Length: 298
Length: 281
Image (cartoon, rainbow over all chains, first blue to last red; front, side, top):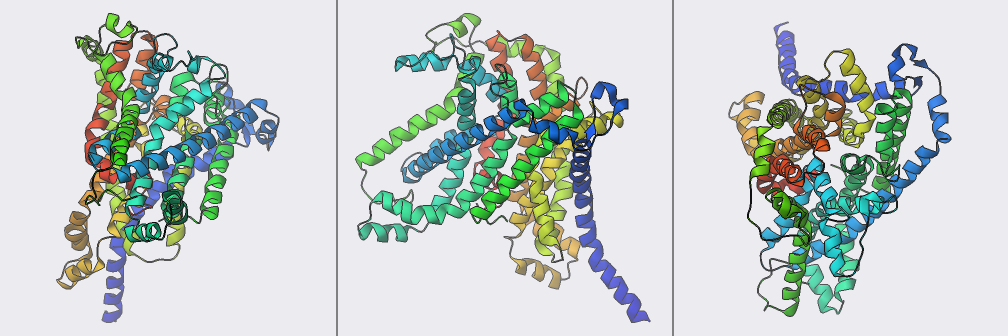
């Protein structure tokens, strides 16, 4: 009798602490993530025009069929795809180049690395304002500097054709350092003897890079790419602050279209459907990269 | 190609070339920030000069204008309250959970961990409709509470992942020794685990701070007067001041100042933060 009671007591003691450690965080996580997620899913099947909230009601798949025929949605989707792939390709290429230079550097490595990584943490609002000044056609630094090498003047964010490339430039400036850092860290962990052995066997630096370094770097590089793609698909701040998707809708990505639908046109139901499509794209892309790249998360 | 820690070879032409290349790269990455800083110190005449002036008499008039406009001071205060509260709550809830997720074995743990990681994949725009409607209905729109709750959607998952990766590196033997010496589970956590993962705590805190300090979208839809944060305050404030580059850049410099101060402490921890601890940095 006593032993059963004390058994129960010990069992409770061993469970009490783990439960009190885990439960609060998990409950909060579920409330703040799962509740809004289900709210968005539910709303995506509703007609909900904010000024006429009393008319809110289920309308089946209407929002989803609407977006199939919505040209603005497809245009935004295409723009998002271009923005993500072009930015990622440039960031990976530059990231490799700069990381390889850093790993070879003999003097002032800490200072150089410190300066190159700085853009990562700069407040988006500041980034957007500063680049708006740099892009100024008549008084901006960019046209002035490019003038020296006989280029331009460009209209940058003020031209429908040049605005998206200009925003890709900002994106590349701010986030290439993340890949530099990840690749640099990866390179630091590579064993030197392998490289040296290959060099002695007569391999040139390019062969060494392709045959030895790249395969060894792949795991860490893939993790970096997964997180970059997620972040690129979610990009909102700089696009919104620099040009609100303009001129016209020439830089309207899916994230911006969701925002405009919800908070300019006040169509909460349709905005929710668009948001679910964006979320599905992020999820599917991530799963595909994780599968294809054999990424080990955690 | 020898790496940085092999300094026994003689200096070559390539080393010089590499240094020059990296200096150019560093200038490119630092230029926009430096340019903003210089702009903020120029008089209106100097700012509009073409070709741009690199040498000039600095003025602090723009900082005075920005600062004496009391509203930005209020926004800074709002930002500090929201950012510090969200960071503190995130650590308070996240660190104990991370400890259990690192040490305990139970069914469904892997799915739980993946679930926590997947919160990172949710685009903030997917949550603006529910947060806007729910907080409006609860009468919590434009309050610190709303922003703190919303920022926890990002911070909490982040802290749990990051701290778990730090705790996993603490040798289990240390905790076992403490238990044998008669420490309770709580004492082991408090006096053995916590002190050993101080660097992780600092990293998590700084990353949470930077995220909440920089956040723009949620602040835009959830605040309008009382709880407006600094990024949004500057955004609205500058819309009127469009042509006044001096004030604009001074405000931008002030907004990034706290983050820049932290920057010199976090460099080493950056990789871990960027990959949410998925990679051993």
